[in-house]
Structure formats: C-alpha cells, structure tokens
Image 1 (tube, rainbow, N blue to C red):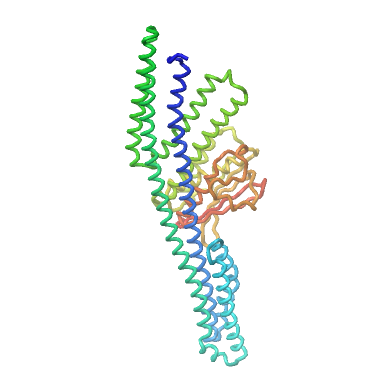
Image 2: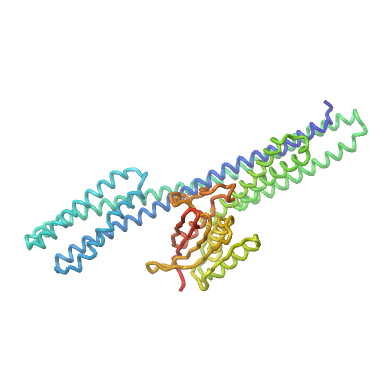
Length: 474
C-alpha cells in the first residue's frame, strides 16, 4: 500500500480524534461518580439533621410527661394531666420514627432497646405515683426518694448519647464530603493536563509521520506535491487550533465548574456529529442493524448531555446563595404556564392559577420549582383530553402550603418514596421523557427555603404536589 493511500490518512486522523474523546469520556464517568458521592453525602447529612430533630421531639414529649405528673402531684389540678396524656399518645410514634431514622446506624438496636427500657421504667414509677396520689397513699415518700428523677435522667442520658453520636457522625460526613470535593478538582485538573500532554504528543507524532510519508511520496509522484503540501497546511492548522483550545482549557481550570459543564458536553456533541458524519458518508453501505446502532449512539449521547446538565443544575441548587425577597408566585406560575402553551399550542389543556399568592424566597430558585412542578403536570397530562392543571394554596395548622394539581396519569403511592431521589422514575422514558432529576431539584430548593414537599396521587386520576416555605406572605 503506498504511503499516500487516503485510507491510511483517514485512519491516522480517526485515531487523533478517538484518543481525546476516549479520555474525555473517562473523565465524564469519573466526575459523574464523584458528583454522585457528593449528593449521597448531602443526603446523609440531611438524614442526620432529621434524626437530631426527632431526638429533640422525643425529649420534649418526655418533658411534657414529667412536668404533667409533677404539676398534678403538686396542685391536684387535673388540667396538668392534659399534656401528660397528650404526650403519652404521641410518644410511641415519635420513638418509632426515631428508630426508623437511625436504621442502618451502628449500635442502633442497642440504643433503642435501652431507650425503651428506661422509658418504661420511668412510666412504671410515674404510674405508681399517680396511683398512690389518687388513693391518698404514701405518694410523697415515693417522690422524695428521687427514683422518678433517676429514671428520667437515665432516659435523657440515652437521648444525649444518641444525639452526640449523630453529631460526631455528621462532622465525619462533612469531612468526607469536603475530601470528595477536593478529589473532584484534583482528578479533573490532572486528567485535563494529561489530555493536553497526550494530545500534543500524539499530534506531533502524527505530523512527523505524515511529513515523512509526504517526503517519501514526493520522490515517487511529483504530481501529488501540491496535494501533500495542502494536507500538511490543514494538519498544522488543526494542530494549532487544538493547541489554542488546550491553552484556553488550562486557563479555564480556575473556574472548574464551568469547565466541567463545557468540556463534558463537547465530546458528546462530537460523538453525535461523528455518528451523523458516518451516517451521511457510509449510510448507503451500512446494514439496517448498523444504522440502528448509530441511532442508539446518538440518542445515548443526547441523554448523557441532559443528565450532565441536570446534575450540574442540581449541584448548583445545593450551593447557590439564597437571596430572600418578596416573590409573586402567581405571576411566576402564569409566566411558566404561558411558556408551556407556546411550546405546544395545540394542547387541549387549561390552567387555573390562584391570584395573589406570595412568599419570601429566592425568585430564581422558586421559578425552578414551578417550572418543574407545572412542567411535570403538563407532561403527564399530555395523553388526556381536557387536561386541567391548578396552582393554589391551602392553610393547615397555621402553615401555608402551595399546591400543583393535575388530572393526568398519576402514580402508585406505594412507590412515592422514590419520587424525590435522583434518577428515580415511576414511568417509562419511552412514554414520558425525562432524566429523573427534576423532583430531586425541587425538594432541595424547598428544603433550602425551610419547607417540606409531599405528593399524593391515585393511578389514572392525577397527582397533587404540596410544598411549604419558611417565610410565606399573606
């Protein structure tokens, strides 16, 4: 085969393209794995905080029980037994929730057995005090013995131990999360430098190889001299362009989050472009199975790009500084609804948006909440004629809850626990497209505003998502 064979030249060029693409795809996989670890660490921190809150709730209920007994014994007024009985009704459920929050933690079983046993010991003493008091027996002797205080101090000691262990675990997880973040930066930087070095070495090696081929061919075929020089100029131009891009990439390492969002999507666009080029150049000679594989390759590249965008958006939501100010939620919802209608003007769907809904929060993040919730309602009513989507508020227990309700396909409440976890979907992607990141993003924004979000649904009858914010305006 002569040195100037076009097929050999194409193979060299293909290797020059595939090498950086392979390295960048490996970088994408590593970074996605590290981002997943960061998100997992954040979820653990949230669970720890919830457990500490539950510990304080159990402690408060025990205090209500203790002060109720004490007040009744001192005054004989039955009104003091009201908090005693109320706390007694809620205490078993609160301890059960605490045990669920500690599930999977070391010594969890030991703590809960000890807590329940000490609680029962105090309850026996409290019941004995009340019984003696009612029978006008020697109840004061039992009070003065201090046995009730000893039992309650033992319960508090167990709760303090649980809280201390959880705080220590939270500190350890924070250290692990920081270490993971530094690892992401270090791995990304070293990998980018490695890509640059390999690109420079590979380009120089290929340039030298091609130059030797051109010089050898020059002695054999004078007529191809102009074509060889033109190819050399084009190759040098590509090398110069890649070198410039490498220099820019090294500068952009100072703003690594932007570098990630840019450099990870570039190879995906390249994969899609090269696949399209292969389809256009070789499509007529390829089998139907090969064309189908190309189509799947392009689809996978597009989906990976969406996943990267959503992961970065989710990460930014977790780190972005909150700017609290009055926000007109009704105006935001109306704007989002108009955008949805413009995308699909032919839909048979109506919006009902309650006017005058306001809250304090970050307007940019609250718009993301409404875009995801209303966008989901729009998506999951797409196959229903006469779709109806509502945005309204409700007040329960003095707390304002904002709700988005639709009459779409709904979902099985047995799987509601998966709704707000990243990448979890309750419907097939072929039926309703998406990446499974939207509701996880909504939950993080609501939690950052001091609120909670929940969902209710019946399969085939629509769904309702309710969320609260810490600072709601009338």
